[in-house]
Image (tube, rainbow, N blue to C red; front, side):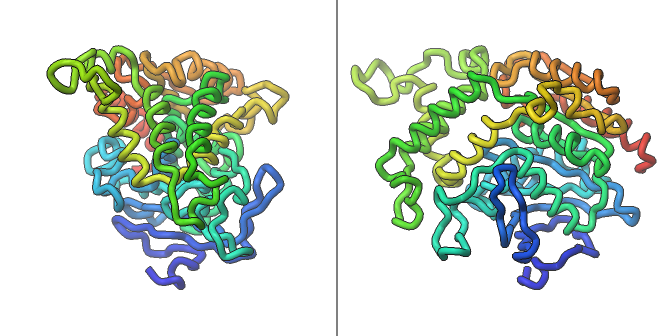
Length: 389
């Protein structure tokens, strides 16, 4: 894809699978909640399917904390399948034969979107910690710029899990006129003290790594791999449930007998070490700092006098479906019920599904037939109401 194509303001001939990096001209400034601004914005994105003649079948899928735009195609760095290939594909709830599916890397990320590893045009060096602090609302505003550049005036739906679910809710609060339906999976209306505490452990692990170099490691040619790996290990525990860990690993040993040392004696230790080691190959440490801080700052009610329902007052014509999992202790079901109560108080049309599973927070990435069936049913209903065949 040439620079001329990337600068194209509108895409007139969608392809079955496409994407790349949308580069916005310097005058297309992204203004942030902090008061800072980003010029020369770049957004990495993928598309699946075709935009119909009425431009009414676009679905935006928002990724979670360490996700990216490769939701239904192999990851270019790891070669692993797309992170949501169980939901996106032929015959699945998000079928490219029916929908024009868009997924973008959030700003602050490290897979094509402007973030701390990007070059600061003012210095010619990586931003590092000179990159401005971002919020979930900033991510959504950047997505809105991308959607407009892709020639989509109104989305059929915004769908997301975890941090992606928070983005979906923010879309409904900020741009209710630009969408018909919202699917929020395993999310919360704000970060709790426990959520913030876990993120702080991860950030401190990164910043304690000697190779972090005050966030200037990219310019100096090093990487804080050990700190980032520990951050990932700590976070990954919160994505699982105790029953799932017990079922998968229990107290099983890696080898016969104990080492009587500090090698990975237990299988669960080896699993976490593998998760940490593989993570550093595809993710940037400073991006982890910025995105976790964006999550910690997330509080939808704060801008509305502490009343969550007021955040959704303009979204009465939007259809919502909220999902939770019984074993999710990162964003437990009560958080989803808080969202549902606020939506009901705002007069929005809302469905709620709590799915019984022992797979924990990450259940939405895994094979959950009830989630797949319920999501299919909700989208079919919303499409019928919209007149989308």
